[in-house]
Image 1 (cartoon, helix red, strand yellow):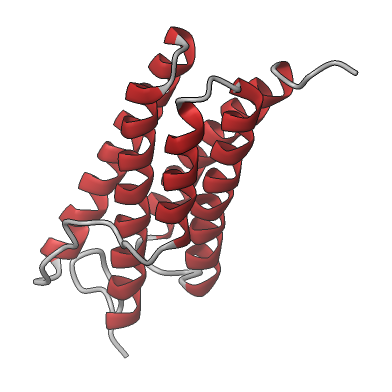
Image 2: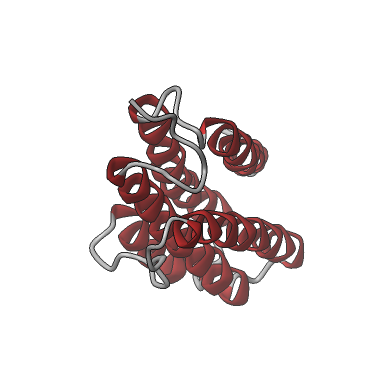
Length: 157
């Protein structure tokens, strides 16, 4: 039995990394598109900041996939739930209802957060575990920021 290291990952680990790359690309695209459509400068800047984080996460994962002799995913998944959630958000961004927009963004963030949780469970003990845990913390921080902002815009009854 050989020891798995970051430049000799098993095919399952590489496949899981590819899935996370696609999810991060979908998230990046969604945040970028929504940042351009939303009519609130502070939220637009937050979306751009989170998009930049997703871009860095993508690049890091792509590097590890390529170190393993594979071609890293360069596009998101048009069939992914994350992508479809962002299409819905993009449409709402033009309406100006910040609570509705942030609720949808939180749902999209749920999907990427869950994708990381699934990969972490499936690859426990993997050579990439520390990298994935660090990335998960970044994704979770973005999720928490969106959730807190959504709560701040919740209509008062």
